Each structure stands twice: as C-alpha cells, then as structure tokens.
Image (tube, rainbow, N blue to C red; front, side, top):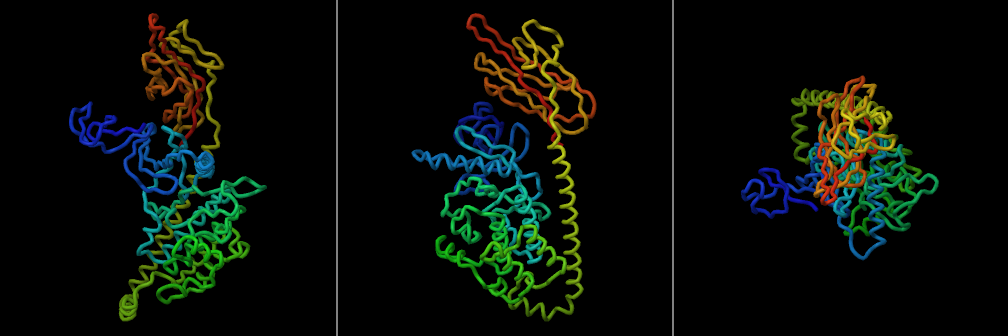
Length: 499
C-alpha cells in the first residue's frame, strides 16, 4: 500500500493532510507518497494506459520516471490479459534496445500492491510539441534528424515504435532528443511473430499514423515509423500535420487516402524549399515501398539538406516582419552572417557531443557484455567458526550470528553492484538482516523483505586486484519457549560491473 511521507521529518504513515505526525508530533501536510521502494514527488503526465510520476528510487538513490499502470478493470479477464501482455512487451522491448542517448532507458518492470509499474530513466526536458515553439526550421530539422537516427537504432534491434509524434519525443539539455513511450511498440515481423493488435484494429495517434496502420494491418515494418517521421517533418514546414478531422475516424479516412499537397504549399506564408518538400513527400508516400527504405536513409537526406545550408523553410515571420527585415537587410547583413556562423558552431558542438555519447555507449555495452564475478559459496569461510553455521556449494547457512568471508579477484577498477540472493526465517515480526563488507569496510546493511529467496544489490567502487568480501548475519534471534528462530541463508553472490 502506498503511504504518505511527512514533509518535515520524512516519516512514512497513513496520516491525512494537516494530521499530527507520530514522529515529530506536529501538524504536517504530506508532500510525497511512497510506492514500494519509490517516493513519488510529482506527476509528469498521464494517458490511457497509466500515469507517469517523477519519483526517487530510495534503494539506488536515483531519480526516475515511474509509469504506474491504471488499476485492472474487474470483469474483463480477456482485456486484463492483453493489458498485462502490453505492459510486459513495452518493458521488454525498451529494455532490449542497446543503450542510446536518444532512447529512454528502462531500469525495472514489476508489480507493487497489484499495480504494474515500469521504472525508466528520468529525462530533464520538455516535449518536442512545446520545445519547438519559436525555433527555426533548421533547428527543428536537425533535431528530427537525430530522432530518425534513434528510431533506426531501435529498428536495428527489431523494434517498431508505432506511435512516433512530437508528444513522445522529449528534448533534454543541449537540444538532445529522447524517444519515449514504447507502449504501442512491437517486434518487427520476421517469420510471423505474434502481435497484440487484432487485424483490422488501428492503434496509435491518427494524425501521425501511417495508412497501413490506419487500416489495422498487422504486418507493420520500419516504413510505418518512417511515415510518422515524415508527418513530423511536414508539421515543421507547414506548421500543422497534413491530415485533420472533427474526430479520429474522419482523420483516419484522410490518412488512408493520402495527400499530394506539398508542405510548403500548406504553409501560412510563402517560402518553398523544393529539396525539403521532396524529402517530406517521399517519407509520407502512400505505398510503403516508395518511402525511404530506412529511418537512417531519411536521416541522411536531412543531413545533406542541413550541410547545404538551405535557407528555404526557415522560421516564418508575419508579413509586417518580412517588410521590416527587407528595409533593414543592408544594416543587418553582418548580424545574419554572424548568426549563420554561430548556428554552424552549435551544430559542430552538438555533433561532438553525440560522438562522445556514442563512445560512452560502446564502453557501456562492453561493460554489459562482461560476465559477472561469481565467487563459489563453498569458498566462504567463517572468521570465528560456529558449529551451527556452514557453507557449501549450494548455500551459506546462518543459524546463529556470524561472519563469512571469501577472496574475490577484480580484473578492472570501476563501479560494481554486489548482488546477493538471500532468504530467511522471520521471528517476532522481523526479517533477517545482514551486513556487507569489502576489505573490512562497511558497504551497507540489508534488511530482507521476504522469507523466500530474493536478490539484494549494493553498489561499491572497487580497484583492480584481490578484495575480501564479507557477509555478516547481525540480528540472530532464538526463543525456545515460543519456537521462534530467525535464520539467514545465502543462495548466490555475484559482482556486476556497472561503470
């Protein structure tokens, strides 16, 4: 059950606003809510499937975006199964994409108090639908080019997004876009993989949906995402998507018919750029075979346009502004030249930033591929032997308080997670507690949350070389009269490199 947290002393409890906090004895208004190991500090957004919260992971002490799915509707078992499958598919699809600076990272997918949730990377930014206000066409095309590269990265991992639109792109620090919301994503159909969408049933955002998606086809491929990117380019040039209606059905009927109206012709002010128009119309061709073959090909076309420095289609001013600029063009020529150089410099900085991120991604992928260090359990020895405790290949058994240690050879310096799978007996309403030490230095204390075996992770920074790993059972309890006995069992220990 979620609990409120006193905003003065931080004590959790089920007290109402303005109620007396039992810890600090004052009238306090809860400013945050506990949800399992997360503290919910604010709402970021909500949709048909769930609510996204700004949250703090209290175990790993990091900020996350926590997507909590809506409670299951009673009496609809078939729909409940489909919703559960969509929830798992979104988490698995996003988690299986190799780390990319422009794709949101999934940390965890689980259930808390019968509510499904996904913990994701928190992106400090704003949706492209808001960020684009006041930006030049060149800035927006550059950002869309980077979005297309990220989409191609997802495609290369067999994932089709199916809901690309400005609202699902966050723009973070330095103008770096991040593609989010893989709730409608699906695996690319190679050999007849199953889809959660019935044939003839359209899902997505009508204004950005491809014709084949609007018709409810199941065999959607990369071309459907290329089409959505083309619609976003159309909106950049014309100021609005090509299709709209009084309701979704009317919009979808126009999508299926397609358009021959170039985006510059639909713009409120003149300023056609034939090359940019051609890129857009190719991307939104009615037949998928006539579109860019990949999102990378679409991105390359935009890159060539950016490198040629086309001025057509830049930010469109009102008529009176155009007249004023024409009268002052001679005096402003020097400023315009400076602006162009400055734009080139910003683009070079952005390219360097992306290259640096890509290098970091390669490093992280190498770390992720490295096998964990797994010290055999039978190599752990008790510092002060106790006849009640023992270690074997299968587990370390604590029937009494004690400290077991083993030597671990660390090949490279870095940051690691020490992951320990443990179970316990409960006594007097309290679970077992153990302490992790490395080279006799405290790493952290862990209070088990269940009597069944679960994994507990503690972060540690280690140098290369040999280290002594210690696990100490600290709250042994035995009462012969009540037959209560608190014991601890360690089933697995491993060190995973994180950085």
